[in-house]
Length: 137
Image (cartoon, rainbow, N blue to C red; front, side):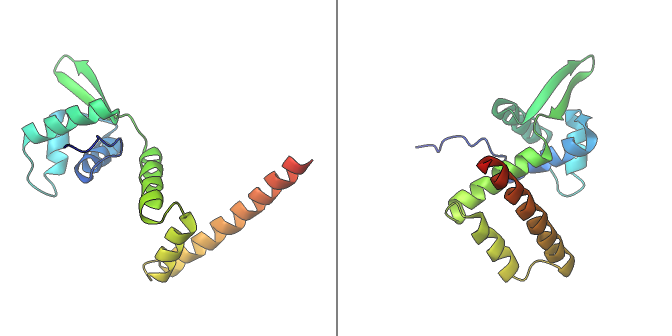
């Protein structure tokens, strides 16, 4: 039995989205050329993937005099939010703090990244405190 289609982009679809985020709009040939900088890809494969991505709502297609122009229908931030949300739900049982603890304890974060996290936590803590105070009044 086939698994249900995911609205989240696959690794290959993410590669294509990265190209479209960079180029804003691109032809099939331009997408293929950009992908070939890293590895060999067949034009037919990329065309098939773009069709699947169109069905998933990840890309848009505009007819032009010389074929189609493709663009991303989702922003980088929206794609990341959905994928991180899925990761938190499936791997960390819905606990974002467990994900952050995993990253911090795993030693993969640089000193600058840890400092950035501290700043985000501090600024968001004060914002949450203000919201809570407003809600009580």
